[in-house]
Length: 420
Image (tube, rainbow, N blue to C red; front, side, top):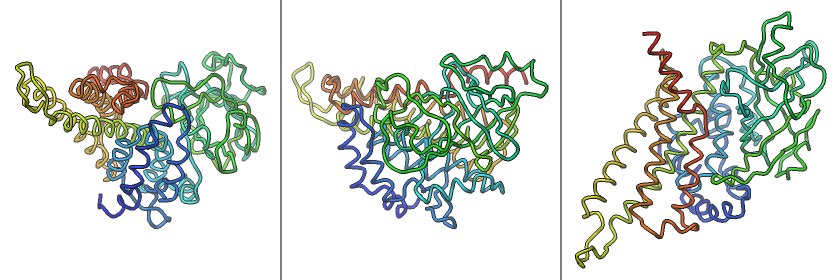
């Protein structure tokens, strides 16, 4: 990535302000409104849109670098913006491969619309490949009415376009109850093969919405946010649980229809690659910052057990821990950058899903290790709840909960081993 786009999209003074605001947003459990406003001003949210469409034209490799920089300053801001950037990158992925179905997403991103990721569902370990939500067709060319509950819906207060998926059920006319129906049980009662629909719910009108205003701007249906957002880390993302009741996906906003567990549509690889790589980039940025703090602390002069002053890096144990952490971090970054470059170059791979899941898990695992090493080297002052490292320690744990999980990765590996 050249320095010019980076300095324009993420200037140092903006990053400094984001870093200064991060502790307050975390402590108050409030949305990163000021950060978002500044990032919109620099047009960072359209960074991946091709220049011919009004964006900055950053490829995925460059976007990874940018997200690392933002995450090193304000992890929750980076993770929140990330879910918008995922959809923009999905549209870019398809566009570059001659598939124009989501070109409108690129145009909307330039116009200032904010996209959110409404895919995750409690109890749905299949994630992209199936859904517990239901989509009722509204007639030829009319789209769908969607009901169901999505979890970890980052950017809940501000999104104007929510990307969702749901199982198509022609026979259901009502909306889902709090206890959602077992969608699998009704498959045998249907004359047609089960299908998923992927598409976008539109919520018009800019600005921050309180939870009670979640339905404002919808053409049809209701949205509510049951429960309370009070997580251990990544608090400023305000990733509310989102209950959809009869919300509309217009036919023009349908991205794909496909059978469950059918990964052949390019949309699936587009989503999986964008989500895996960009989410990993956020945690790589946390690792970057943790090691920066660790190196700074290791070069401080301290009084040793023999009463002599020496830099901490001269302690063999500290030197060994820090060396290992730096090397592991470097290796995980290389794996991430290689995959991003393969996406940018549209390389064919037989192991895309395995490689992406492996890299996402490796980067997030390594980032947690880097933060722990930094905690050990910085010492007791890092254990202060108000310290930056304490916040990074809590934020980095969120990496455990993003798909694909380590358990899902192990299952994928076993599948590859059986195929051999």
